[in-house]
Image 1 (cartoon, rainbow, N blue to C red):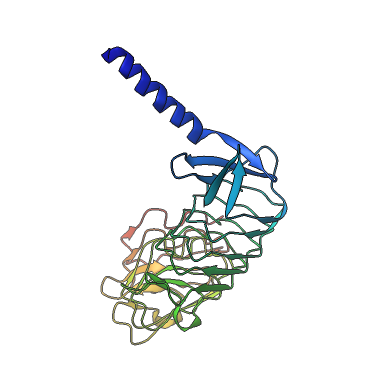
Image 2 (image 1 turned 90 degrees about the vertical axis):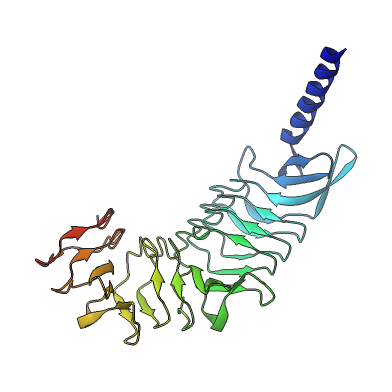
Length: 308
């Protein structure tokens, strides 16, 4: 009796798993059932690329049943270079990791108001993406979401978003509660009330050529500017009490420890510097020579990584 009951439960679980993993196409778009109970599906990758203008509907009909389209799955449009535009319906709640990574023909994206999370590298290396609008419900976004989007110039967060903002038309995503900048682009102007710059916030932002750090910034995480290969001008506000860019060195120095925190291809390391921080010149492909002063007694990990 118990054995038969156990077998029945296992068969039911297998059926539910099979349904949840099943994939099918409707009007050229591939889907996967995510909940047979809630009648929801997400868009997934398919055999053959998506191309042109793709419109994601709010719901679809499949096997005589109606399903709500609530997600864009991981790697759903990965490396679909022929995808020129994507229209996301208001039913979308999640955008998975690497969902649109390497979609090199995308030029703009509007994140609908019901989307709550955007995964890591979701739009990574979309090197023709110029504008992004973030909806009011987004509460989770990765600092790597737009990694390598070298042409990104406009980032706008909906004014009703309670977690993030893009104050003062700064073209960045800022965590409102802590005033930490989590995502930047080549046209970002760091607002005067920003207190921190997150790890990888400008990762591989090769379009960034100049940087001004206001006096309000008290914490810059290592790797925040890794891969900014074309950065040539770095200036820290004279009133900043934590960092400086003394002697027009085109670098960020932690004043109290004399640690060079960020350099670029035009940096001249001041004589009083005692250490070079981790990732300080990471990805600085234009660096052709460097002179290490005699007071430097430590060089952090990956300080000169990818200096080709």
